[in-house]
Image (cartoon, rainbow, N blue to C red; front, side, top):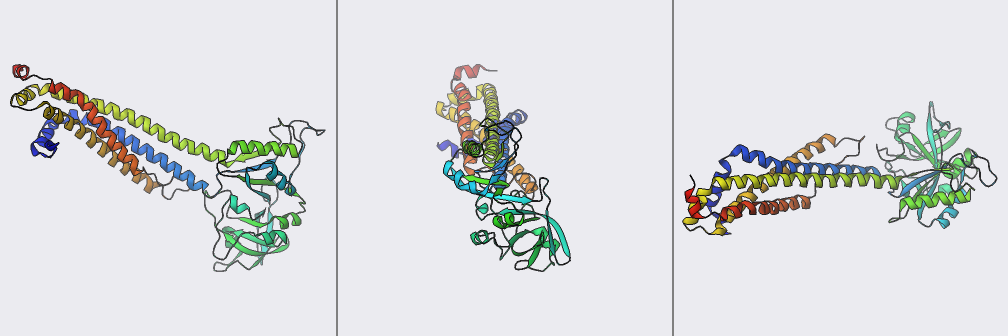
Length: 421
């Protein structure tokens, strides 16, 4: 290994490479392009994964919704097209029959799906906004942030059916003065006075709420709008490490049993499984990563084979040189080491340039997308361990492919080399 630190060794390496710069450069680009594709695609896949994680961090990754729809199959004496509603009193039954459920939150609303919004008045200012009836456990399924001093609905609000509300940022702007703190103030919702207990922070891509929503206790909502035991829909979350798809099917089967809906009726209940969607998008990001590895390795191998070919050509062109060196006492290991060093140097240099170029492109992408809120893409990076691993692969491949021309150089006999013109 001492020859690695000799100036003459490296002088020979650079002289050999420099004899045909164009040929060497074109061949090295293959390795460079392969590692560049690997770094760029892996980083992009990580950016997608980070973006999806950011979008889903405000919701339980095992969450889902359940609501009722007109039936499509007659069953139990009921005709086709029967319409019905979920009930608040069904919550204990769902939990007992589906132990995989961690949290279940009943929700009702006014202001969407053909239901008129609530009319809100404060002083001389008025507006129409979406009103939600919620329970405290809702924030365990969908996280919410509040401005200083604010809070969400608590158990006492539910128990006493208090007239308190949480408002969105746009409502604060439209109903209150610019420097006025709405917390502790009263607004009138459909003729009933409510105490504002907080203003929730609106974050784009952060769930299903908007900046013009009002949240009031579920018990207050059903009393105001004469909803009785009816529920608009259930928001649910399953325990960690459960099969969210299987839990969804079990919940729907239980609901069909409770409400006497035909087991084969696919339209009686509607659902949306966020856990399944999260797994789908995560799988997509992993697929892109796998694709980057396959394409990158294939391109790198093609480039490395090209390096092996130019070294074989170089060995043939230097037949006389190697014969003279052998005649002057150069050992086979010294000749072999010289060729292997050239192979590893070319491969590793190309790999390092590819990594630098890929990192530069990822940096430019990160700067261009750092304020992007409409698309799930955040901080595209490649773990250091993968970069180090790729460099080690470069060394191994360079060594392996260099063995062929190295052995060819060693096999040259001095007497045959001296006969070369």
